[in-house]
Length: 483
Ligand SMILES: Nc1ncnc2c1ncn2[C@@H]1O[C@H](COP(=O)(O)OP(=O)(O)OP(=O)(O)O)[C@@H](O)[C@H]1O
Ligand SMILES: [Mg+2]
Image (cartoon, rainbow, N blue to C red):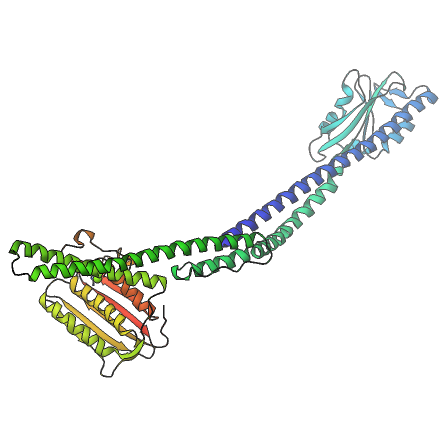
């Protein structure tokens, strides 16, 4: 979510930056262009004025170029007028010699002056405008060169020029101001964009939170609140609701199928067991048949257990496994389980010890389920501990909760397997399943976890391969959830 918000803000800011940049560039170019146009108008006016002055003076005086010594020069009166022109001005004769300069032109370095007068040196001079680089410090200039034909035979043309820097000055200022303001605009836009993105994504966040709360399989009956606005969010909520309804339906039929199938299997299994048991005690049965009947009975028993477990889990999933909660002394319960499993442990060479508090530990629980949970944990401990090992059961009580732990010195569980042990049908070593030395279905811990959670509690496991395992169930005293 945070990334979409950040991405939106970034794109918003980038789009604005590009817009500002394009707008600024266009404005700058336009200002510069019109600045140059203004310069062109000014030099045209000055050039035309100078041209008129030359031709009119010629008409009146008849001769305006004097030759003092070897250098030709303009009439002093006209020279004085031309000198006062505020821009660069050059008048050249037919031999390409400079006849008159404005005061500003006189201040130019020799090479710059040469470059400036160059357009006048071309034979067959035409009226034309352009840009000339004069080099530092003047920079490029806009010029207008025009032929002068009605001012006597010796004058060929004149040129007026002015630095483009004058036109660029205004736009350059504009550019500088824009560069200063742009970061402020962009930071502002970024903040506004971040806020906008956050506001528009908030409904998505709400929907996400709600979906997250529902995604645990038992809350599929819940639905999202559909926003009244009837916008995209309402459509999203409706779509998710539709999906939840379909999920609920398919989960429901799956659970119902498992529950129905397990239930339907119970009776034939019972009939089967009764039949095999009767055959076992029949006096005339040959010993080899007896052995295979024995194995069949073991399989039937295991299958009955599995069907029972499946039925329990399917009912729990459907919410049809209510707890028969009654206050009881957990010490008695633990002691009872320890006694039952103690004999089992003894038969396979495992010592079982249990530690109980002196005072009764009274808690409102479903005694039958808690017993089932303890049996699962202790039989696991015995099953996964080699002969000579120890299984320790302990019951403790504090102000908030009762803790039952089962610790063994068995084969342990690999760290990579720990996240899966509570999953249905998961077994660390499937190769030895069902008929092997450690038979089982992989449903025991799934049921154990369900029982702990149905009581509002939790189950945790600590294990080191080769060293042993400890399962700890914590049952809170405060409330008992009836899942
Ligand atoms: N105390 C333990 N020590 C080592 N591994 C264990 C222990 N308890 C459980 N496991 C591992 O977790 C797996 C799942 O245990 P779970 O009790 O669910 O199934 P199971 O014992 O194989 O079969 P069943 O359904 O008959 O109990 C076991 O197959 C085993 O690999
Ligand atoms: Mg087990």
